[in-house]
Image (cartoon, rainbow, N blue to C red; front, top):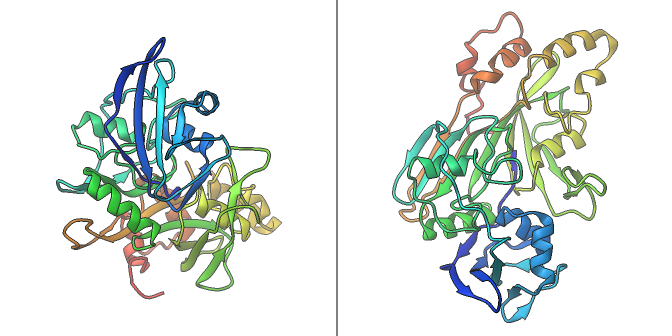
Length: 359
């Protein structure tokens, strides 16, 4: 996730087409590298870019097996599970179409690419965004992508559509496998910059609360005792009159993790339309007018994946990348800092010490 999501990387075997009793079938297999997943029907819908109904039908029709056993819809997958799926022609995953979308590539070799994703770009195909995603853009530029679920080749982790910043994608199976294991073992450092309402009382603030699906709104996440273990460390980089600039470090990768955790502790991300909870309205009457004026400068959630550090999955060279505060959020940051802003917002993170290694 924001982070937000630590995708369970998948190893895809060679798909094949064969004639079934009455219609053409497409057959594919993969191995699960993540420690655990959601129940298999939801997991397949999410990973394969098919609808939840289609995924449920595949399971109900006994077209999904785990090992040698036919899968039940409630099955939870674990690392090492071998999953095989037969797709009737009307359910087969969509083919990836190229899309001419500009990308900022900050590093690339034969094994992986690191890019600086702009806000507004969906990472992988899904309902409503089949042909205008980051994956489609990578296909368009001819980038070789490692096997994964059909809708997510090469994707190791993802960012929300309206979160900008650094991501790594795998171009070979060995890179995909090792990067996924690295992420699961917390050996990949991902740090985010965010403007959040109010002021945290301590730094670092360790937010160690489980996150799961909202019981009524399945598109939202929530802190719940029934969720999966999740930890975010929040460091105060700068304190402004109405907001903090935080550096947030992920120790897990749940959907919307940073946004959910910040909202849970009473300091939602500025501009977050889902978890913001009317952040400006929480201010006292004296500050509310200024807070509402500040919030109007936020075109989206003020969250940016600014720092990525990991060892190359093949050469083991230490790779480190940083990304400054994005242009579309600079008026917001300048206003938050005040009239006497001592540095151009384009250099604000470095000036404010965001990239310093201590605390």
